[in-house]
Image 1 (tube, rainbow, N blue to C red):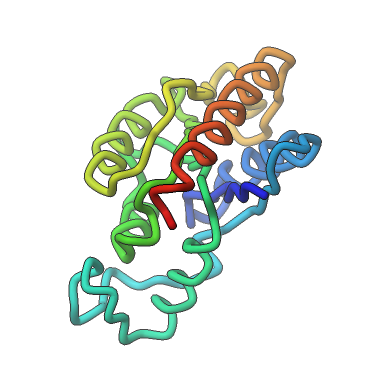
Image 2: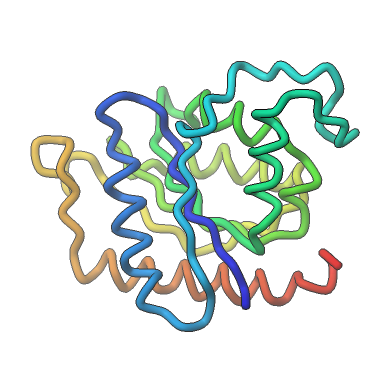
Length: 185
């Protein structure tokens, strides 16, 4: 069965990413077209990239890299739950992605972004990275505004419109993950 990982893309104390990702997971888990898993980059404690060889070589020396690689390699596609920091993507999340190369290739990618303007600049930055990693990023995305969609800036309040948009993102990621299967074999 197609396996999609929902990646919590922030390590900041008090982050909103975790509650948003848990909501995404709760919605995704109601579906029967794929299996879903939450993956939290914070649990991997990845320092600023510290491997002696480039990730394309797949010659990982560090245990944290080997564990991260093993986890990411298990998925057919991903949903990145990403905040927007300073009009771009979060450094800790980019660092985690940069640790790997082959593990991301020919896999589908969808986005749930949040921030002052819905996380759209973070998602756009991720789309450039996805292209380099040979990931198929889907067109649909869910954008959440910190002022509109969070009470007191830190309590996520999902609506029916959010649920409908997320469903479209999940539909597209699942379809592309399946379509790319022959390229991953």
